[in-house]
Amino acid sequence: VKTTKSVAKVHSIHPLTDSILQLSLSPKTFVDYSAGQYLHILSLGETYPFSIANASLGSHKLELHIRHTLENPYNQSMLNEIKNKGEVLIEMPFGRCDITSLHPTKPIVFMAGGTGFAPVKAMIEQLLADCDERPIHLFWGARSMSDLYLEEMVLHWAKSVSHFDYHGLIDESKSNALSDKILKTIGKSLNTMQVVACGPFDMVYQARDTFVDKGFLPQWMFSDAFSFEGK
Ligand SMILES: Cc1cc2nc3c(=O)[nH]c(=O)nc-3n(C[C@H](O)[C@H](O)[C@H](O)COP(=O)(O)OP(=O)(O)OC[C@H]3O[C@@H](n4cnc5c(N)ncnc54)[C@H](O)[C@@H]3O)c2cc1C
Image (cartoon, rainbow, N blue to C red; front, side):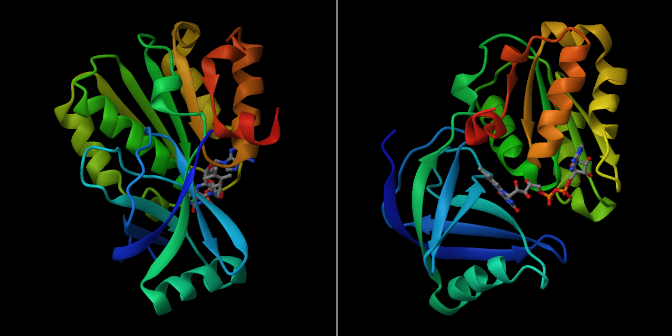
């Protein structure tokens, strides 16, 4: 797959919570991508993968949701470089868990853990912009209420889009609560749907095992976690 490097200017940077930043980049050379794909930020000899959180609808901006904490010096040095220079080197596009790889008609269950919401947001934006009428179920699990950082927008979709529904979950324990909630809510019909899982890799593997136990065919589960580690 061909990727391109480009310098990208910081268009805006907003804290969504005290540990998640929304960064909007304007690349000097715009490279098209498919909703669900990710990019690399190349900073101080390190490579940082981040999902692109907006669909490619013509703004030529790239939105990222970046979790950061003071205990994570790795992210902090990259964020300092961005702050000092007002620009950053990126390489893209990466990833095969994107909207064009999905089955074209099966209803979609999106499973997002924490900032795994970023690529899910991009894919839902693309589906809405395309007037796609497939049923869309979004399950978003996070460690705290504030980690459901764009929930207001999601609730608005749930109110205004008849084929979209949303189920948020606060789960402090890194347990299988999110996959259990999906099974409880969707029931046996899950086996007629496709699942797109984005977030902590352990969450994705755990969910796949749980669903496959219930007769779900693994070929209808999509995640970057599978191509990343070859599982
Ligand atoms: C290709 C790629 C792209 C990435 N993109 C981003 C990005 O855009 N932004 C970013 O900040 N990081 C990104 N990362 C880093 C990483 O994947 C994030 O750590 C991940 O998305 C989880 O974010 P979180 O810390 O908010 O989740 P957490 O807060 O740790 O988890 C959120 C929820 O997920 C569920 N969960 C978590 N762990 C488990 C488990 N073991 N079993 C079951 N359920 C679990 C729970 O419901 C939990 O409440 C990326 C990594 C890769 C490889």
